Image 1: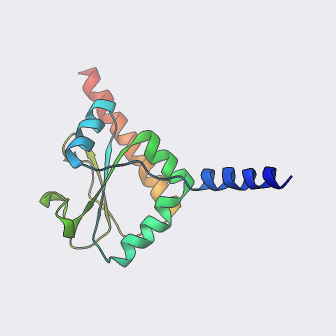
Image 2: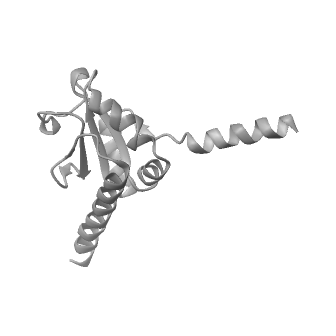
Length: 140
């Protein structure tokens, strides 16, 4: 019985501990997003940024958010003070979440530590707009 309970705890922890599949290299992330026909989510952070940590430890650990990002997006984290962010995506504050189609931002970035429900709504809007623009190109 103890082994069964231990196994159940391990399974529960693994299910609730979902992680975003981050691309390590921006050029590979852009290439993969193009190949898979998905929007690229670029999270711009800075070392020591309190609100970056809040976003990453709350919203970006939520199982629903992780599932949507892993299924429908290609994700990349760029850290400003490690020079892994293109200058065009650097903002006055962090965290900033950009959504890219091809090599062009789709919208202005989402700024700050956005809560789960609002982040999920934003992801849904990005997916809808991405599909709309893809469908309009196909019909031309």
